[in-house]
Image 1 (cartoon, rainbow, N blue to C red):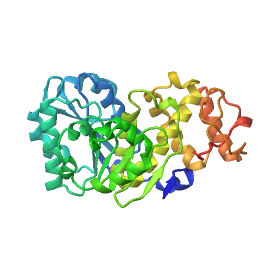
Image 2 (spheres, rainbow, N blue to C red; image 1 turned 180 degrees about the vertical axis):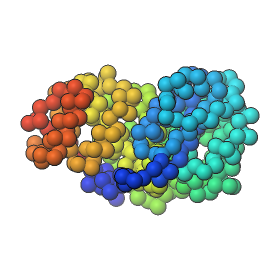
Image 3 (tube, helix red, strand yellow; image 1 turned 135 degrees about the horizontal axis):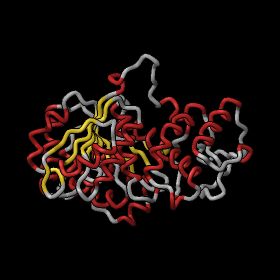
Image 4 (spheres, rainbow, N blue to C red; image 1 turned 135 degrees about the vertical axis):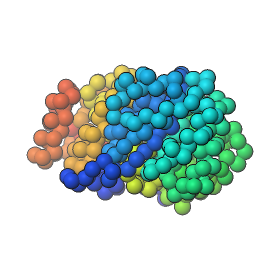
Length: 348
């Protein structure tokens, strides 16, 4: 049975923040990412993680991309790794114990590259996690998945408590199946391989699926070309890993993250007007308002260029909700008419 992901099902998952809390209360995430060619992927993942609410974010990056990232991301803590060919080298293996020390979650993959040295580093990281930190949540994305897919029985190398985030092409490489077969039965494939691999899985794409190793399946009824930009997956990976670091289970972190990611896309689209010009970095700026929308059940603004079809009819906003949304709209120069706000068919 597939359960729909909607505001009612994810509100309770949003981490609570007490007024007297400190950064140590919200986890420590290490993001292993980036290469010379894909510096932006590391930046997007790290910035999205910072916006997730996690207390501390450590960016483990090759030395070649440290200067531009350190100059533009003030809040991260940098763990600079030896590099080769513009990517992480095999010499970085000796720094793995430092990377994992006192962390509450790990993300590896965005913009990582697929050099031989990076591959050696990845498999050494998996080995040490499995041996020394078997309970530490690990999110594998992008090139981490691509490197794994070249190894037979790759899933046997993973520690437990992993979260995999492939799109359909990456899923095809991991399974050995044609993309046409996957598209024909996305739900069935996601459920089957989450069980086989004994890991949580996000199968990205229109109507993203979240599958657990015990057979649970959730679907986000959201399809919008606003997410059809390189870097959208990096934002999702960073956001999801940040929620993992705050103590959510892989299944719940994935569920909440895909909802927030979609809502942030809606809000960014309302600000910028067209999905073609709404970029992944614009989503990051709206993650906080996506959380407000979840907490206060504020429906997304109807926009004349919004391609999402709304079928549940016009909704009335309470005074508190209307005030909060007006604050967002004013601050973001959004073109909205509060008398024309609708709930999405998916109840996003």
